[in-house]
Each structure stands twice: as structure tokens, then as C-alpha cells.
Image 1 (cartoon, one colour):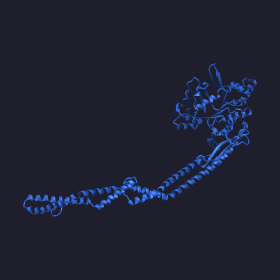
Image 2 (cartoon, helix red, strand yellow; image 1 turned 90 degrees about the vertical axis):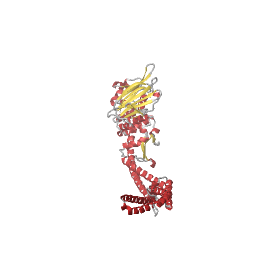
Image 3 (cartoon, rainbow, N blue to C red; image 1 turned 120 degrees about the vertical axis):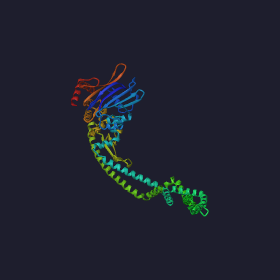
Image 4 (cartoon, one colour; image 1 turned 135 degrees about the horizontal axis):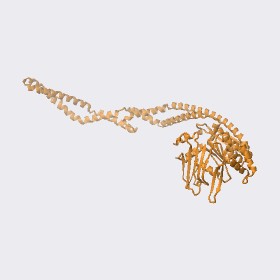
Amino acid sequence: MLLSLSIRDVVLIEALELSFAPGLGVLTGETGAGKSILLDALGLALGARAESGLVRQGAAQASVTATFDMPAGVTAMLADSGIELEPGEPLIVRRTVKADGGSRAFLNDQPVSAALLRELGSALVEIHGQHDDRGLLNARGHRDLLDSFGRVDTGGVMAAHRLWRAAAETLAHARDELDNAARDREWLEHAVAELTRAAPEPGEEEALAEARANMQRGARLADDLAALDQHLQGSAGALANLRQAARRLDRLGPEHELLADALSALDRAVIEAAEAEDRIERAKEALSHDPARLEEIETRLFDLRALARKYRVDVDGLPALTEELAGRLQTIEAGGDGIARLEREASKRRADYEALAESLSAARIDAARRLDAAVAAELVPLKLDAARFQTSVETLPEELWSATGRDRVEFLISTNPGAPFAPLVKIASGGELSRFILALKVALAEEGGAATMIFDEIDRGVGGAVASAIGERLARLSERAQLLVVTHSPQVAARGDRQWLIAKSHDGLVTRTGVRALDEAERREEIARMLSGATITDEARAQAGKLLEAA
């Protein structure tokens, strides 16, 4: 609910402070007094386009501050934008516009964007006038309004749509993967066959490289190892000579103790030489140079490295690649079964969604009939008895089906017998449009909306009983929401819980627009002026009193 409005240097308004309360408030004044300026100022605070023309001549900037109590649903919206408010704290919206066109916006003194103000404004205030293209005139919101009116539950359809879309996306992804794999089938078959024939093993490159290096070293050491054989082995080798010397010395050993020590040394030399001979033999075996085997190892090593280069992996990655490609080939061969299973799942989920969406459509059609009847009952008293109202519920093409169903809902009217139905904004004149909105608002009253509603000259072009009917319906609406009405009708003005007079003043140099709250006596006088014109008669005052008493 709007609590207060402070305006500084907006067009003809120099300084203005207004306080508001629940119920029906009416703003009256002579034509040209500046009622539109007041609405423009509030619109600026709610995110409307900031134009330098709003700044009062001679002022550096204009500012508007609107204070609201915190309505339900707005707290979460603000939290999403990083604005935290304490429970019970009022919401203070401030907008400034400089004479050069620059503007700034604040929520409780925190800078925000004009886009956030517009989003917030639609939740705080509904402004209905002949040039307004939001609210009830925006067909995008008609489905939600109908669902609220008919107490239609969309939860089941939302859940079914989520499951259907998930199944459809899984199916599409599987089909893409299968199509991509199928395009590579011939290449996969060749690659798997080639890798399978090669049968690479983990660690094989390192083992082959080591064996190859040993053989190459053996080839280089072959002559030296042969010479060692001549030095150590055979009848003329060092080991044979050591053994022969040891035998002779053994026969001489008893002759002198020193010879016994020499024999021990020779025995040790024989043992060491034998060990050396054994090590040399083992080295010869390890470094054996077999040209045929070396060629075989090199061929295998080169083949593996060529495969690795071809498939852009390390040699050690070839075994894993073989498994991966074989798996992809198997997926292609078995993919048909998986796709069929996913198709059955997606088809079932779609059928579930369609069944629930059909029930939802039936519920909406039933709600549409009831809404049409409720609006029709309001049209005759509002002098729209020749008009007809229709809630259109039509099935959308499949590509537009959503979590809220498959229906497009739009409010249509026909203003004359036999005339085709068309959207409100395209058919109704200014006065008719406001009365249609009022009829809709009355029919939808229990479904709520913004906490504050503003009707701009809803009674234009009507009077008498029609104006009384408008006033009576505005009063009914004000029991559920705060209403502010700009009016030229005394019947509507009399229905107000409070009234403000908008008037211009001149001091010979400057023209100003002011607004002041009226007491009961001033209200009677203002309504009398609305009844009689410039000259207020006693009869007009008496009639004004009757209107106020009746209201």
C-alpha cells in the first residue's frame, strides 16, 4: 500500500507532501489543473522513462519519493537483487532526474537500476488509464489471471512437463551420440581391427626399448668379450695358469711356511677369477647380439610407435584406446536397443503431459465460462450493455507448449452486436476501456493483484446512474485494495473515503500546481462545484450533501 508521496520540482509542482491510507481516495480538480503531473511523478518513482522535461523550469533536478508498506512477494524479489530489508521496515522508493536528463534510482537509499524499479512497480501499483498497456491489457498475464480466478492447479502439469522435457533431452542426446558414432563406423571397424591385430600391451614400449638397447650394447662389446674369453678361458688362459700354479705350489707348500701363504693367495685368486668368468658369461648372455632378434624387436617397436602417431596417443595409451574404440563400435551395434527404450520413455512422459494438459485446458475452459458470466453481469450497469466479453482459450502449437500447459488465454471484447471479438486495447475507446477494466477487476476482485490500484478518469464521458455504478464498484474494490481515482464525476468523488483537490495557483510570475486534502465541508463544496460548474448554487450544495450521505 502507498503510504506517502513526496514530490520536488516536477513540472509545475514545486514541493508536495501527501499521505495516503487504505480505502478509496479520489483526486479532483478542474481540467488542466495538473492531475496528470501527479500520476507522471508516481510513474517516475515506479520506473517510468526519465525525461528532462519533467524537471521544473529553473530547477537543477526533480525528485520523487514514494513510501510503501512491504507487500507480500516483494521481499523475495528484492532479496534476489541483493537488497535486504528488516521485517516491518517500509519500502522507500526514490527517483531523481537532472535537468540534463541523467537519472538515479534508490530503494531505501541503496542505488538500483530503473529496470528493477519497473519490475517492482508492477508488483506495487497498477495504473489503469486509456493509454496504459500493462496489467489487464497485457495478454501475457491473462492465463495467470484466469487460473487464479478458477482456482486451477497447474502443479501436476508442471511436474509432467519437467519429466517429459528431461526424457526428450536424454533421447535427443543419445540419438546425437549414435548418429556421430554411426558416421564413424567404417573408420572404427578399421581402427579396432588394426589395433586388435597389433595387440599392444601396457609397458611394452619400455621393455622393447630396453631389450633393443642391451642388444646394441652387446654388439659394440662383442670383440672385447671375445678377447676376455681368450685371457680367462682355455689352456692358455689366465684362469688355467692360476690353477696350474696353485697345483704346483700345493706340492711345494710343506717345504716352507711362506709358500703356504702364497698358496692361500693363489686359491683366492682362482676363486675371484672364476667369479669374474661367471659374471662375464652372464653379461654375454644378457648382451647377446642376435641380429634376427634385434630386427624383430626394432620392427615391433617401430610399428607400435607408428600406431601411436597415427592415433595421436602415447604408445602406452594404445591398449586403452583399443578398448575405447571397441566400446564405441559396440555402442553402435547395440545402440538401437537403447534408443528404442528411451523412445518408449519419452513417449510415455509426453502422453502423461498431454493427459494432464488436456484436463488443465478443460478446467480453464470451465473457468472462462464463469469469468465471462461474471464480467457480463458487470457490463450493463456500466453502460456497456451492447458489449460482449469473451475469454479465449485456444491450443498452442506443440513448439509453444510449456510447464503451464498448452493454452493461450486472452480476454476479448465485442463492443457492438455482430462485431467480431478482438483484444481490449484494439477495440475499446478511452472511457469504454476503463469501464471494461473495472468490470474485469470487480469479477477478479477476490484474486488480488497489486496492493494499490490507480484509475485515471475511469468515468470519462458518463454520468448519472453509470457514474454511480462506477463509484459503487470502485468502493467495493477498495475493500480489498487501496484505490486512488482521478475523477471528474461527483458521484464517484462522493464514494471516496478521502478526497484531494488539485489546483493551479499564480503569483504573477510563476504557475504552480498544488494538492491539498479536503475536510468534509470542503468536500461538499468541491462536489457542488463538480455538479454546477463555476457558479456553485445552493441546489448544488444540497445535492452534494445528498451524494455524500448516500455514499
